[in-house]
Amino acid sequence: MLASGKMVGFVPSTDYDRTRAFYEAKLGFDFVSLDQFALVMSAGGQKIRIAKVPNFTPLQGTILGWEVKDIQAVATWLRDRGVTLEKYPFAQDRELGIWTTPSGDKVAWFKDPDGNILSIAQHPESAPK
Image (cartoon, rainbow, N blue to C red; front, side):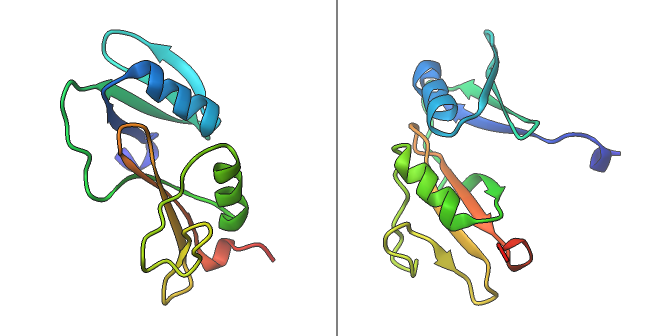
């Protein structure tokens, strides 16, 4: 039953205006709505509900991620839009912070204004030919 439904992501935030500006202007997501319960954005036909939380500590791991066909192009696009890509010490690509796993997957991370960790990933079968 659940496998046929659309997944909705949930993200905590302390400031709707700042968060909307990031997800809309920096990431290119579409604004759907804002009410007393959540700011709703749409990305690739999937919804993300951003709930205002007065105090929270961001998780130490990734909370949202996107599979992309060309991680280098997407990471460059993000950087050029003013998104700071994390430069973890294990990432081989020091310029864009892209880590290549032993299996050939590639991952890069960045944070939203509240410190939530987001990622982009490219898997060998989706790499550009």
